[in-house]
Length: 417
Image 1 (spheres, rainbow, N blue to C red):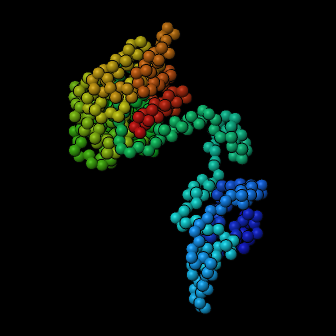
Image 2 (image 1 turned 135 degrees about the vertical axis):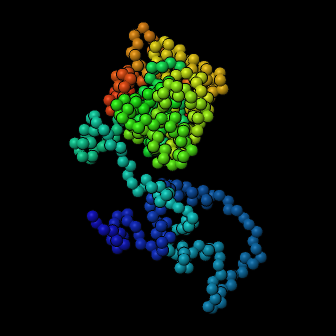
Image 3 (image 1 turned 90 degrees about the vertical axis):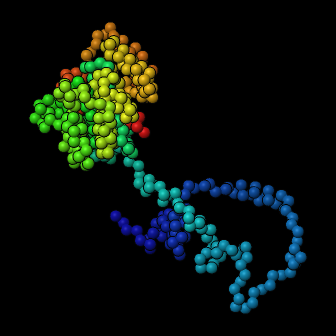
């Protein structure tokens, strides 16, 4: 690689010219990188000269001493500063004599310097798979056609999910009907948030009916072998939890998704109050920027007022069965009529095709009906990895299902910012 020095730089075509000061050199560099303006043509110059000659010159009152010649400075004295000699370079030589132009003020910073992209050529993202990916691989990156439209959409979803958040936010997932995909949505969306966000999310099982959130995220066998730490245990010792290390003793981990298990004892599970939940939520807010709360069925159990009070947005779980669609509408109607109209209007309705209803059900009509009552409606296609009611892992889900969970995760974060 050739080395550019001050000596050989002058000989390079269009290379920098050595200047007597840094300010001149900077001004010359800025001028080289400034947008070029078209010089006036000779015809334009002649036209301007003719116009100037034909135009009457403005007259001014002659001063009384105008006819007297200016007094010459005494020998050895400094010449007086006049408007004609005001523009000088640092060494006292008039600019007119050197042929230089007036330098920009020192405070003026070149746009070339303040724009980092001016130093680096824009690089297209690497295409993955398909014809574009094959061309990129065969040419070892020499031909980069960039990602296709589908890949660009995926990248846009990833950017929306991974946006930096200031503060802690909570999304509640609820429904009026069980077995409709509420917990599987919590796990799938939670794992998606954990995959794309720099900070791990937290999922809370607030289901009063022996919720199975942790079992769906870890698997029944792994959860049974783990220490049975539940939300009740956390509440019992909440005054002693003053660090993330201490909090992790009551958490379960499915990769980067952190979970709080619900109470399994039916005599205790329904004892979670609104005040209890708010204490849990306040503790979680100290360490997590995103929390998901699996609310179980119903909207009137003890903890629900605390959950809705602290929720930033909602996911309403629904299905394509007529009963599921009706209950989704009833949930939104109940929220709007009980002081939660803002949450209802900005809710995300998620329709999971869990049971593969017959062709007699008009899915488009159900989607159109519910879409007008919420901020966004997203459909999750039928997937055995969701419908079986067992462990939910992103690796075994269909690409369409994973895409739906990405759209839900992006819509959730959209509601935070």
